Length: 234
Ligand code: ADE
Image 1 (spheres, helix red, strand yellow):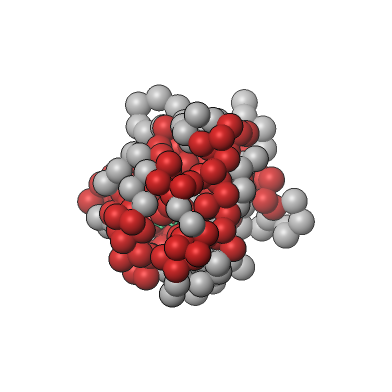
Image 2 (image 1 turned 135 degrees about the horizontal axis):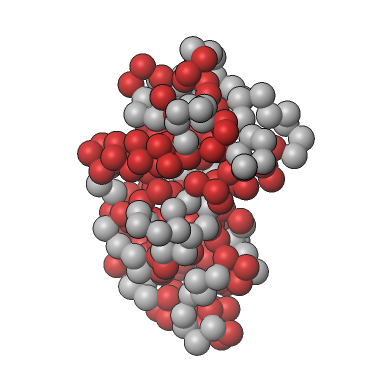
């Protein structure tokens, strides 16, 4: 018997975490956006996209991402670039600490990891500018490691679907645990699941409104099932 309030129980007697996953993945195959960083599994490309997507909208990141990779086509090229040039390439994206961290990270990967971006989230979080979310994103998107990547959008989806009454304190730990239970270990991919749940948060289960009437996981969602469609705090 799973402990109380795992996704298995939270989804209701007839539905399950497996059903949530299946519905989500089916929807993502049909409706997921074709974004440049979804056409690659190159760890360096994934890393650049994730740094840019911290605090910046998808539409704005697309052009910067492509241009940055033309300017710095490899992690070695980035590591060797002058700091002023890297900052200039970031101009317009804002939050320049990200550029500084990405540059330092490239140098550290060249120095301490033989130019290979680690796949282990525990090693990734030790790199400059990499938090738990970015570590999970790089591990799952580039290396198919079955690990969750819980950003603001994903946290909102997990909260509404499985823990609508979760108190604020301690919420992060619970949401990461639920994320970990849901990420597929066999069959479907961690890449697909993490991209899909992020996409659901961006397109359907948004901060302002949970669009339950067109939500693919509604039958497996606590908020959708109870008809309580008032958005929970993001
Ligand atoms: N935000 C962070 N990572 C993302 C991704 N891979 N696709 C869309 N939005 C994102």
